[in-house]
Structure formats: C-alpha cells, structure tokens
Length: 363
Image (cartoon, rainbow, N blue to C red; front, side, top):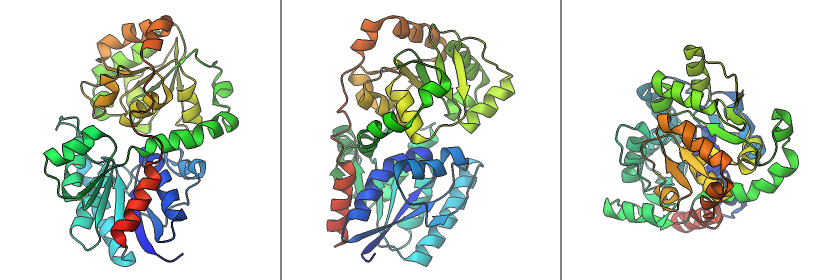
C-alpha cells in the first residue's frame, strides 16, 4: 500500500486494545499506511501477542523486546529503539496512546527528529506526580504536534496547560473496541464456563499498579478482601501481581479465583457479564462505565474523574474494599444505582475520526 506511513508505537495490552480501532481505520484509508512498532513492555505472550489476533490487527512490523526493568531502563531502551526505527523507516508521523513508558519513549524520540508526534488519549490527569504514568502523559502532551483528547475535560486541560499541539476532541477508542467486539466475545468466548461462574453472579478484579503490588500491606488487604465475598471473585493476574502474591505466600481459600492472564475477548466477556468490577486500571474503569458495570477503584485518585462524577465508579482504600464490595454484591438496588453512563467516552467513532484527521494533517 502507498501513502503516508504512520508508525504506531505500542508496548502493553491496553495500548493494543485502544490503538486497534485507529489502526484498522488507517488501514482502510486511501492515504495512510500504518506500521506497528511493539516495544515489548508487556513481554508475556498472554498479555501481548494474543491481543493482535483477537482484535484483527496485523502483528508488529518491528519489535524492540524491551521487557522488564526499572522505569529508566524501559524508557531508555525504548527511546533508543524508537529512534532507530524512525531513522530506518522515515515515517510521516508517529502515533502512541496513553501514558506508559512506551509512550514516553516514542514522544521523546520523535520530538528530536523530523516526523510529528501524535498523542492519542491526551489531556487526562490524575494530578498525582508520584505516579510514573502522570509524568509520562504530561511530557507526551507537551511535546506532541497533534493531540487527540478523549473527553471535554481532557480537551480543556490541554488548553489550560497551553499545549501547543493541534488539539482534537474525538472520544476514546476504548468505546470503539468494546462496541466492535462485545458481540464477538459473547459468541466465541467460553470463559464463564471454563471458570465455572454464571452471568451476574461474580465479581471481576484486576490489580497491577506498583502502588498496590509493591506495597505488601496494601496487597495483602486487597487479596484478603477479595477472598471473603459472598460471590466468586475472578482475578486474572498480571505477572507483577502474581509474583507479589507468591512473595506474600498468599493462597485463596474462599471466594477468590486466580487465573492466568486472559485474551481480550475472554476478558471483555468476563467483565461484561460480571456484577461488579474491582480494579486499579484506568482502562478497566472506562470499560466498566461503557458496559454499565459498577466499579470500585482501589486508588486514592483517578485520571478518569468522569466515572466518579457520574456515580459509576468509587475510589476506595484497601481497608474499605471488603465491606464496599460485599455491599454491592448483596444489594441489587445499589448496583443498579451505579449504572447508566455508557457514553462518557464518546460514540464509538474515535478511530475513524483519528484516521480522518491524520489524513487532513498529513496531506
């Protein structure tokens, strides 16, 4: 295919999910030629490669295999690899989404070379500089040439910070992904039968942020809370979380069911049919609101404040989790009161809007 080559940089499961609609829309364009660079920040096969297959996105054209390491090690390795790839491929633009080390690497490398840097999911803020993700997203926004904001709040934030990029309000591609794949997930995924749970009679949990996994006291409280509920709590474990639980010598004996990482279709089905979601993931907060699943976020802050304002998400500390989750699981009226805001992040056309805007910008 001929056209403007767009280098799409990603490195984690959420980035694959969120960029898939934009990649597909770019591939359908007459003037854009998307190429994928995977930094390999999520180096586990279950957290990476399977998502390309589930989402119908071509496997990466380049792979850096950055792997694990400190924030500086991951960023430095990504920075060198992205720069090398830009020099070799000479793309017309570089695109990245969100706030990971892969995004920071892509932003810094591109800012010092010729092609414009395009930041998807720009402008979100937790206002907590102790979070590496907050530093990454702020830096990425301020060196971007084109910024795609997912919400009006994020759009306003970019202008308040005097970000000089061309800013566009397009919604969040996570809506595209959920709407595109939910029916497929319900047809193809047998995850509920595999685990042995019934629709609406279990909770789903994801915990992976260092604030929770690297603090043994917080993680122990979270694990115990999930293991003392009146319904099963299905917990697909991130490699970091699995290692931290093993270090605690924690073994569930009641409601908690630990599983291996899941592919996107399996996780989407699991979340969509659950009664409640417990998470520290920004993406799951969004997905829960789209799917109208009440959400408890085990963090002191969130960069998705729309979900809290809408009443579909609550911020809680580990010590509050057991009682709060039990209340939701045993009170259908309370669960119902935390539903009803599926449109906080747009109408599911973000991917096509991004592709159309890039056509205009690059032409």
